[in-house]
Length: 282
Image (tube, rainbow, N blue to C red; front, top):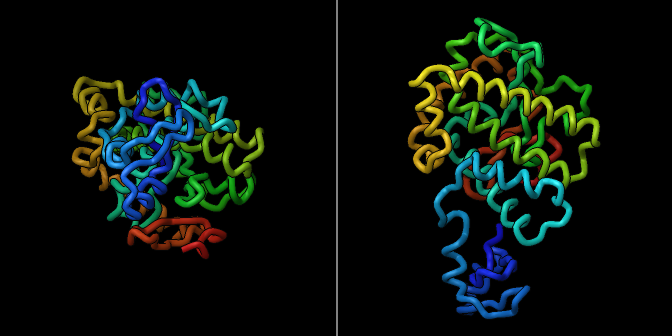
């Protein structure tokens, strides 16, 4: 996690973990790696993502689009945006901490009919749900191979259920659409063809969710709040936890093993659902 230099014209970044370590050692200041000016550690930590107001998901997506092609050059604004994406992902995981006892929280969802799907006329349709590893932050096919069916399910949903789930699905899909390019670039485990397939699936799901979100004034008002501080802090979106519980019930009926995901506990005593190859790290 990174925080920017206090000098407005400087693009320097400080690692939060090092700031905390130096503060514990009794050092009140730390020099900027770019402008070399000594900065107050206390003031820098006030700019840490956990201490700042949550950033609008729409704003973060627009900012990320501008730096997406520079993921291998994590400097300046690129580093700042990636740090904010990391915070967005952490918020997503934290919102559904309680539900993690019963099943995984991360998944992508898109209609089986692909671009033929009409979000205006459907009543009941089949969707493909793909589980993600909460450690690598990648969909299971990206880890197991694109031909693998582990953690991949075809489920039927009706229009009414989907409308109720839209706030939850919007926040989930919006965050994962930011995470996928970052992790694919960082871990180098997804080839270009597989990445384009996964990205198009996420994009399709996002477009469907956005289209359904625009139906009706009441639903529009709910979605208008989907990117606000209140919702991202968990006040509104926790009402959607019932959606996740319903999905867990559906998945357990099809596959009690959740595609081979293993439930582990991190150092903050939070449950995570991770691919078995990462279970040994907990």
